[in-house]
Image (cartoon, rainbow, N blue to C red):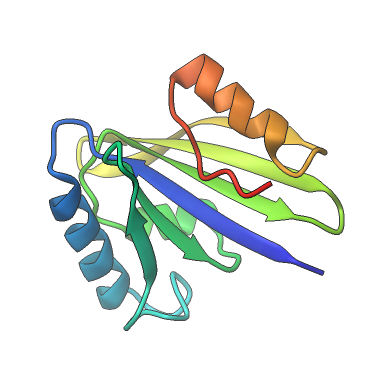
Length: 129
């Protein structure tokens, strides 16, 4: 079974380098329930300024509660290819914390979820399939 999670942070008016630095610092200071690879988290930046993070499975609300990454919003995509299922979770940064504002589930490897968040919220998640 293949299962992965990718999170894309939209910096808003912040510099993507600062968002990525805050993300890495927040991951390193958290416990192993947030990220098993705390010393070398898999983060990246897209050409349009979005900051991404790959990880394997986590409890979304608890993980986002542990992160201090000021940005406009974040989209977490949880995908299981053997079930062809995916769920997207949209979080917005409000008063210093992430609040979950939308959820969408599909059975097409996340294609419909990614399309939904792009059309409804203008945020492109990390597209692997």
